[in-house]
Image 1 (cartoon, rainbow, N blue to C red):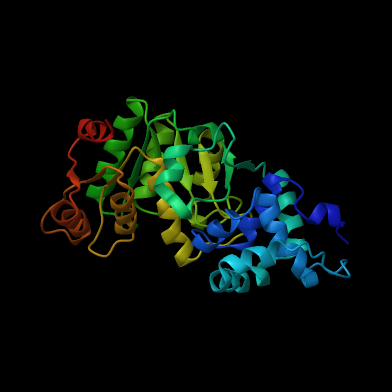
Image 2 (cartoon, helix red, strand yellow; image 1 turned 90 degrees about the vertical axis):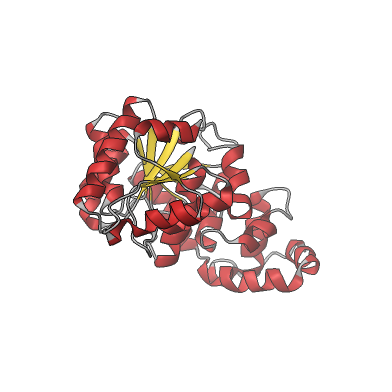
Length: 323
């Protein structure tokens, strides 16, 4: 049996790990709840301790009044949140995450750490800012002293789209930029591979745990990124990606970047979700035009026409976008 001291958070870092198990990405209610407390540790224990039926070695919960004080302030909102969080807490899961950090050499980055992305990252994300980031590889790449560009696009990329992604990625590496994308098939994969081949640095942001290679066909690629760049997620190790987590993951790619460029996208491409995050956060947005006969570029044309995206035809124009 896991000892209680090993299975309950005892400091701020462990408290943030626990919160990442309790909540889904971008949980605004959880963010507001945490802000009612002086420390993150205090906030997570206020959820766990009075509801310890999931922690079988504790015979009676320790009531310290914290939950009641908070729930009195925002009763319905937080009670709805509690209903979501409580089914997800458990000693085994928490202990397993702590173990996986060591097994997979996973770093945790939290506010106040040197490698936390910083105030710009937090202000862009607002109440959806991650409580923690899990990193395999070089966590220093998250530091906002770096120049970072997000390059993304369709999974069903054409030869044209992959060629443009390769040219832009190689050119940006030559100018000292770190590139971030989501490790998906198509444009994202081409961006990551090109950066590695060019001996640059790249950040892959995942929708699941950093110990899980997704898509599975990019397992070798993600291992290379972990060796020479950074694989990042707000989800704890062992977590599987879901559609919602993919959509939410995109906001982190955008918040890290000085600019986002959509290389190729169909009219309903998921990369348009990243573009909408950029518009909402005020992150400079660019899109690469394609043949007017190509459905694979219809989304890029839409961004240029309707969303004010800069028309990107060269590396220099991306550099201008980041200025």
